[in-house]
Length: 216
Image 1 (cartoon, rainbow, N blue to C red):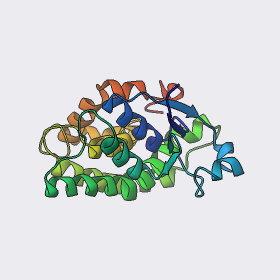
Image 2 (image 1 turned 90 degrees about the horizontal axis):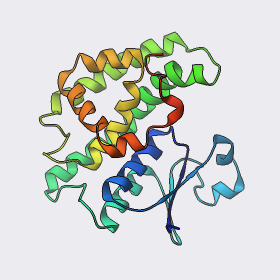
Image 3 (image 1 turned 30 degrees about the vertical axis):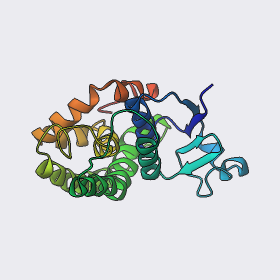
């Protein structure tokens, strides 16, 4: 059994990005799927005192906070490097990880995706005001991405942590009808997302419960 374990809820884009990095690096790991109820337990708090996902265990080393996990996996293991060596390019990768964490996730995922896709799955009714407002804000975020995309990847000509982390967020935005329309209107962003979506790592980590729920 692998000594490397990822704990998390499979639908979480943060959890998904951690798993994608491991797959891209060719690292054997075990995925411990947990539910939201487990986050509140004392047992989980020993892994992450903030009770968030994911958590990475590598032997006796325990790490939480997704950007830290992504960087650790890339730097501690063999496999293709997912960070540039050039200081300016590496700074751009960190910038886009920050954009994904600070803007794409709280608005595009936790508002737009949560209301439009997850709320009906959980038996609720989407708040259309929140949907409209979050779609409007996400439009601006996607404008920035569209402007900065110069190749099939956010930074340089190869896959980086920026693509994986931001791509995990934009993938979920695209599952909403509002987000899909926004992305289709931005050809570089649409091509970038399509390129990522074809990767085995993205396909292997798509949570089954969301299949067929797009455009809901």
